[in-house]
Image (tube, rainbow, N blue to C red; front, side):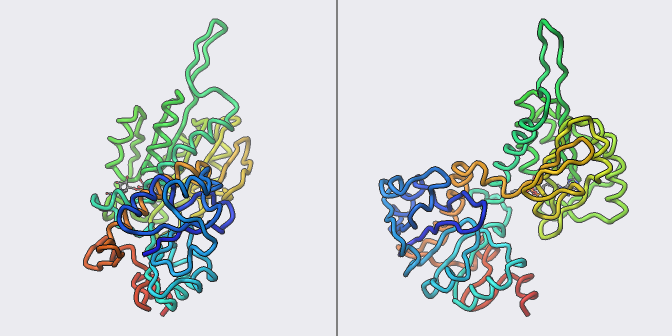
Length: 371
Ligand code: NAD
C-alpha cells in the first residue's frame, strides 16, 4: 500500500506532514512511501533526504495512494485525484470546510481530522493539537521578547539595576504553559490566569504566579474550558484589568473547542498597558482574545504593539513538522492490519477523528450542517 505526502498548497504553510526521519517507520511496516517533489523544502528537508530515507519522490505521489498525508486539508482538485477508498490524514476543520467534506464523502474517502483525535491518554502520541500548541507557545514568547523595547531579565550592572519585565499569560493550556516556561527562561516575572482551577499547580510548577479571581471555576468535560456567560466574561475582564495594566507583555492563548475564542481583553485595557508593551494573541485566527487583533498582522493600540498569531507553528517549520509527522505516523500505524491500513471504528480514537467514510459523513456536527 502506498502512502503519499503532498506539497502543501495553502498560503503561509511551511510545514510538511511527513519528515524523512519518520519514513522508515512506514517502510518497516511494509508500506511504500511517495513524496511530491519539494514537499519538505520549506521545512528544511530536501528530496534527497527523503530518498535516502527510503521514499520515492514523484509528481504522481497521489495516484493510487491508499493514504494521503498533509498538514492542511487537501484541495478539491486533490480530492478528485484520490484513489477509491483512500484515507486522508490532515487537519480538517470539518464544520468550516463543508464543501470539501462533501467532496471527500462523495469520493468515498476515509478522512481523518487530526484536531478531532480524542484527548485521552492513549491518544497523546497522536495529539497534534498539543504538539503544535507547544510550538506556538514557545514562539509566542520569543515574538514578544523580540518586539519588546526593553530587557526581560533582571540585570544588575555597575551602571545600575534593570528590573525584570512583567509577562502576563491568559490561558494556561499547552500553549500557555510553554509560553510561561519560555518567558521564565528569558528571566521575566510571569503571572498567568486560566478558568480551569486545575491549571494553577502547573503554572506554579514553572515558577510563575497564578492569578486567583473571585469567580467560580469553569471546567467542562475532558479538562477543557466551557463557554462563559456574557456577565461572567465582563466580570473576568474587569478583574483582569489591573493585571493587564501592570504587564509589559501579554500573551493570550484561550480557546474553547468548537467556539469563537472568548474576548478576554478590550482595546481599552490594551491602551492602558505600560508604555511600549507587546501583546501576542495566539487565538487571533479563532476570533481573538484581544479586541482589535488581526491574524497575521501587527496593529498599534495606544502605545502597545498587538501581534495577531497566524499559523504560528509554521514559523518553526522543521520541528513543528517533526512533531506533527510523529503524530500522523502514530495514527496511521494504529490502522495497520498486515500490509494494509484498515480503519477500525470500534477504536474510539479512529471513530473520534473520522469525518467521512464509505460515502457518509460520520462527524455529527458536520453531518447536521450538511443535512
Ligand atoms: P485550548 O487550546 O483549547 O485552550 C487554551 C487554554 O485556554 C485552556 O487551558 C483553557 O482552559 C483556557 N481558557 C479557555 N477560556 C478561557 C477564559 N475565558 N479565560 C482564561 N482561560 C481560558 O486548550 P489546550 O491547551 O489544547 O488543552 C487544555 C487542557 O486540556 C490541558 O491543559 C489538559 O488539561 C487537557 N488536555 C488533555 C490531553 C490528554 O489527556 N491527552 C491532551 C491535551 C490537553
